[in-house]
Image (tube, rainbow, N blue to C red; front, side):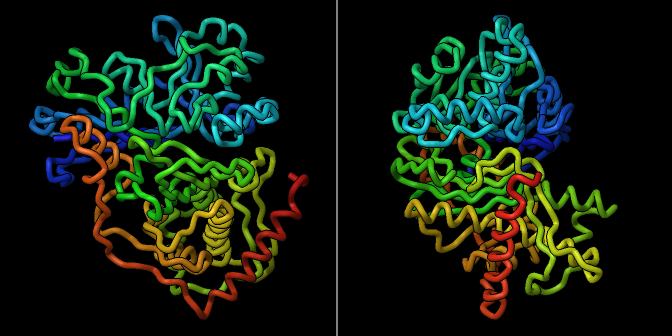
Length: 478
């Protein structure tokens, strides 16, 4: 058996797969986010451990006893600060926290960061968060001995090792993304040293073995290896077989992601596209990211006093966008705006805007934000002819139909099963335990494909033009 653990923002998921990659068991545990101030987003790493204990403990004992490899996937960019005894010094500052926007701008003004990392320094990345901590919590910074990304704190609990892997490390603003190594020059520019960083391995490599205490508590063999794993997007790509140039997927999760695999390193930071290492050796990927996808729908559902699924299930067939337009910038935006201050808006509200019309506007707004990402990737020469859809939002037929039509691109939905980060992590655990590689990361069988609606495509083009106009109009107002 091979275990994949995916540490998300809203929960931790575990899947157990056998040698044929058939999922034989799965379990989940919820997580909550603390927002003590505007733009802040934090979690307690202790809650991650409790969630992992819950998930692993819920898996069948005979399955745990057969585990040979464990893979880890997780939310990226989080700053988990530890002292010399591996005690957590403060809550983890998460990926969607924008408090370090000023620090990010300062680092981004240093041309070395874009040259070395291949990316803009975004406020959500790890390095500017450490600069913020040094300025605002100097006593914490002085005690800090190690910085770990969220999933790598789970690895520390599982193995006792301080290790990271390339795909997650590429989102810190400290990695030489082309060379796949920490940059001592960029670390020094943020008053950090190499000693504070975890060792780097590839995602399919062995990073350690299960600690005796974990083995004894859960009945997992002590010989079980823990793979390097991957950041959540790269792990999802492994799960859906997006590992080579020309392959792509769209994820409608808490955030929205447009992910395209590449066989070479082709950065273009000016587009606000992320260029990161993939979870497999010698491969990279490009990602357009929006900060609120299902997060935007869930926000509106709370506002409307209904469940998100209830809002979307009764929408019927795809319709042309109405006058009401929604901008999903609830906590700033990444691709292509790189704007931590911008906030969302409904534009064009009228008496006729009922709950269904507002729901459609939210779904359309996220689809248009993904189109913004597609256009940014296209500016680097990346072409996408077909997408595989994953994430909670992919359960909505209306959303997928809107996305296909907004992009003018077919969107395929896999046959029943979860091909997200946990499954990709399990595949990486299998690779580490058996020495296999990308060949096992096959694409899933497709249940159905949403084709662009040729009749509605002009209306969606017009809707996108209104979206872009509204986007420009609200800059500086929020």
